[in-house]
Image 1 (cartoon, rainbow, N blue to C red):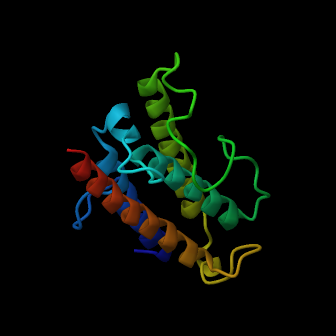
Image 2: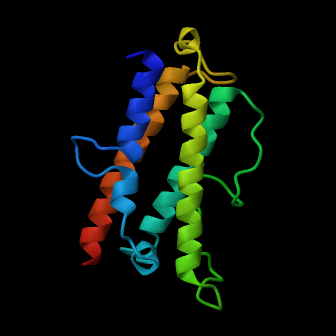
Image 3: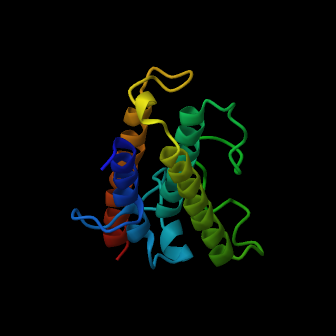
Length: 162
């Protein structure tokens, strides 16, 4: 297995492929309704929905760092954490449609990340990504670990909500 293939396995096992450790991020989100995703364990605490969008944002950010492309705009206004559901939701906004849209955003950002990782040159994996102190391999392993960290949070929030 090449190093690029290993990195692809890392991000796949953290996001949506079979893994020995239990649910991946996408697996943890499977079956979560918009209402479940919007449930907040306490004031000022993040919900499942915000975690999903946060993960999409960091996939977008790592993709940009790997390519050295100037950062465009993430499809949502802001950075890192996004209030979800949006404050206007519930006033004529279908929460289910909004939740599905944000899950599709997460899937799209993962697909883009995966395409960029698959195209990486093995010889450049240990070199810093453009404009970064971190190597490309380190960034990819980090985003895979990020998914797993948040998969655990999603699982915990699902149990707390019961």
